[in-house]
Amino acid sequence: MFATGGNRGIGLASARAFTELGDRVAVTCHSSEPPQTLTDAGCLAIRCDITDPNHVESAYQQIEERHGPVEVLVANAGITWDTLLTRMSEEDLSTVLDTNLTAVYRTVQRAAHGMLRAGKGRIVLVSSVVALQGAAGQANYAAAKAALIGLVRELGSRNITCNVIAPGLVDTGMTDALSAGRRTALLSQIPLARSAHPDETAAAIRFLASDQASYITGAIIPVDGGSGLGR
Ligand code: NDP
Image (cartoon, rainbow, N blue to C red):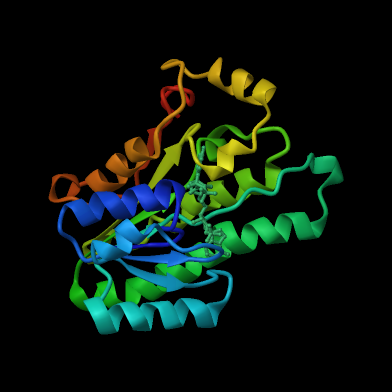
């Protein structure tokens, strides 16, 4: 399994979940290293900025040398860059699209080459509930995350499943920055009345990569405590 952004948050939880299964796991890290416990457990950690095509190619080459072709890709790394649409610059838009869409396309395309040769593969893209309902101040993020849904519909005929998960509010570095007021407002919209632990998101990812999910592809799986009301 290869997860982008596996040094913290949902990516780290996913890396741990697959490591516990005994899988060969590789992650990218960008600004900080993953915890020592993960690398001690055999996880390959690769410095990689996914917005740089050379970094991504180099990451795949290192993984293939150590682990062989990638069988499961979790395209997880992402950023937010929030500002109201009326104040959003083209750079605010392109920065988010570069990381959350173009880099995902790049990562998926590279993985797909090996999966097509192998005649099988599993791809999970980490989108967001915001892709389906939008959010004030997140038009750039919502647009990028919604576009991921369009990326997943092509590879099924080649025995490669590709699914999208749409998490709601997950307790990670990304949501640590929320103000108390915003957090309370978001929680009030969640039927389960709480945020998610990253492990709960990782569990859905692990399921989609498992044999039990062999007939699921092109799906958008909400992992949002009900906040998207099944959308
Ligand atoms: P974190 O901010 O904790 O983690 C983001 C990860 O993305 C980090 O590992 C970070 O690496 C990596 N990353 C960012 N930019 C780059 C880059 N250019 N190159 C390589 N890696 C990069 O957030 P989450 O764990 O919450 O987010 C994971 C995914 O889940 C994201 O796609 C996010 O949009 C999505 N999501 C999160 C939700 C939430 O409530 N937390 C809700 C819905 C979706 P580094 O630390 O090294 O910079």
